[in-house]
Length: 412
Ligand code: GLV
Ligand code: MN
Ligand code: MN
Image (cartoon, rainbow, N blue to C red):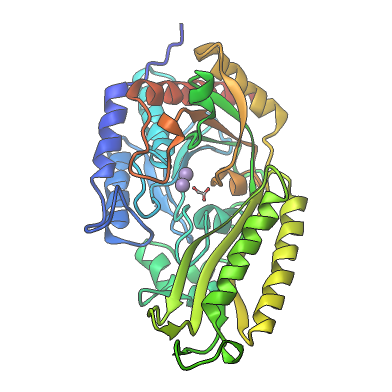
């Protein structure tokens, strides 16, 4: 019998409380970076952390941390995820990883389990790709030198990325170099809903994640010429939307030609977006993903060649902004095995599965041993209001997380 007992009702209540911090007039449970709802949800979380006796801190990227001290002078174990959502998102993607970490900390205290290591509950900022196009922004800025100063000037809805980070408590002008170095975090764990159908289809409740896909993503701005849709002959047009359509088809074809990879344009802005006006400008967000990063790189290069050709043929200029390349990651074997053993103790049928979704663990894994645990998603639904995981499945995931924390504390 494990000496740890998760309070499933308290976990559920916390998830439902956070879900109430939702932007007005948006579908589902929407909490986008840097909205007021997102800021207020984090203020609530920070207050909860402080009431629990954790020491809170917001770093230069705007990541929120709550720290409980350990018995020894060791680097901390980080446990967390994100509290932002996609537009029209659900209540569990990211929130489970943060509030589950918090529930694990509370349970360890109640069960009188002290740890050798400090334990940090982490809420990484802006994990979901926004119109600034940078996904996993907080963990990227914390763990890499990928953050580019020019990203700060990009404006969405009248707000520069610089201002958005300031509004969230960060210090954008300090970004560019990693905020944490290898060796400064003992290990990192992230509990997450699967967001796909595999666990449910296999009838299992837990999975140790064997790897996370790499993602190449960018904003492409196509500049053509708006003109009359009736009076402008086909050979005299500079139609940015027609070029974008070719490029979207190319992404689909490239990804279909590489089994196991995916490619998506999920966001398009058209100017002036009128039925009888040739599109003068298009902004699209394009991304490609695979566990095999070489394949992603090759596919992206192929896409770029097609994009240049398609635009040149139509007299359209294309500019690329806020390009990110997140490497695929495989957890270190010792940590993956440790997570796998804990999962099997709680569910004898627990499986090992890769993640097609991106996660903060991808960046944290660059500077620390990092691993993930999945719980099932009903009907494999996620990034949608229907996203659901049964309370007992959520609690089992947190139980696995807490037991993993205790084992990592002993072994690192
Ligand atoms: C995040 O949820 C992603 O995979 O895009
Ligand atoms: Mn997500
Ligand atoms: Mn997520």
